[in-house]
Image (tube, rainbow, N blue to C red; front, side, top):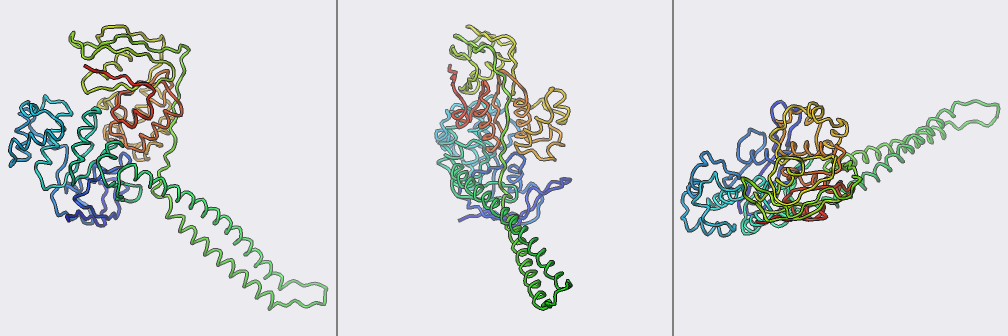
Length: 494
C-alpha cells in the first residue's frame, strides 16, 4: 500500500494575516478515488500545488509516488494530438492510446487533428487519457467538468469509474457521487477525510452539524442556569457572612461559628458551580467550528403584468447563414424556470444572447413582451476588473444587499478588499450571481452560472430559486441543479 502522509502542514500566503492551513495531518491511500471539496477560496487548488511541491510550507508531506496535475500544460498546441499524447506518455504504443480513447468514448480520429482545433471536451479527453497512460503516478485532477456538456461529463464519469489513484476537485454532485469513494473536505479549521461519496458525506455532515447545534443550545442553557445559581449562591454566602456581625436588642446570642461554617459551605458550592460553568464553556468552544451557517439568499423577482413573456416558434439560430440547430418552439410565462440543454457549440448561449437583445441571425418567430427588466449572468468573467465598490457603482446595485449576498456565499472581510481580477474563478462567478439576485427583474437570464462555484453555494442558490420562484432561463450542465430547479427543458439538437 502506497501512502501520501501529511503531518502538521501549515501554510499561508505572504502578506496574508491568516494561514490557509494550520497544523493539519492525515494520510491518503494512493489507490483511493478522492473528491476534494470546500468553499471557494478555502485552498483546494493551493492544496494540490502543495502536493506538487510548488510552495514552501512547514510540516511534512511524504509521498511514496510521484504526482501529476490535470490540466497538463501544453506549450505548443499547434500539433497533432497524438504527438502531445506521446510527449506526456512516451513509452505508449498507438494501439494502447486508441484503446484508452475507446474507454472514454472518443473517436480515434481526434488523434490526427491539431490539438488547438479540438473542442474543450475533446481536449479534456486527450489530456486525461495521456496522464493515465503515463502510469504509476497519482493524479491531481482540477475541475475537469467545467464548461463540459452533460454527455461529455457522463463519458468522464464512465471513464473514471474504471480508474483509481486520484484526487479530483469538482463541484458537480452527480459527478462526485458516481466517481469517488472518499471525500476530502477543507473545513473552517481543519481537513477531514471520510469514506464514501458526496451524498454520504453530506448526510453525515448534516447529522454532525445538527448534533453540535443541539449540544451548543443545551450547553448555553446550562451555562445561563449555572450563572444564575452561582450569583445567587455567592449572594447568599455574603449575606450569611454579614449576619454574623449584626446586633439587636434580643438576648439571643448569634452563633458566629455556625454562620461562618454555613457561609464557607455556600461559597464552596459557588466555586463548584463556577468550575462547571468553565467546563461547559470549554465544551461549547469546541463546537460549531466547522458548521457552515448556509444562510438563505434572497431574490427579488418582479412579476410582469403579461403572463407570456417570450414566444419562440420554429426558432433556428444561424451563423454565417448556416443553421446550427433544428427548429425549436417554446414559450416563457411568469414563474417558468427553463433549462436550455444540448451539446457544446450547438447554440445554447446564442438563444440567451437573442433574449438580451444581441444581434443574432435567426429563422422562425421570436417575440418578447415590451419593457421587460432583464438580469443577465454572463458565462465569462474576463471583463471583471476593479474593486467591489466600483463594481457596485458601475452596475447601479444596492451595495448592502450585494455584499450581504456575497457574505452568505462565503466571502470574508479580506475577500471584500480584494481586487476582482485577483479573485478565484469561483469568487468571480459569485460576484456575478450576487449582482443578479440583488437586481429586481422580470426575468433572469443565466449562462452557465455555476462554473467554479462550490457545492454549498450551489445548494444556497437552488434553495433561493425554489423559495422566491423567479422567472429564469438558464444554460447549465449540472444535472442535479437542472433536476431541482427547472420547470421546463428545451433541448437543442442538430
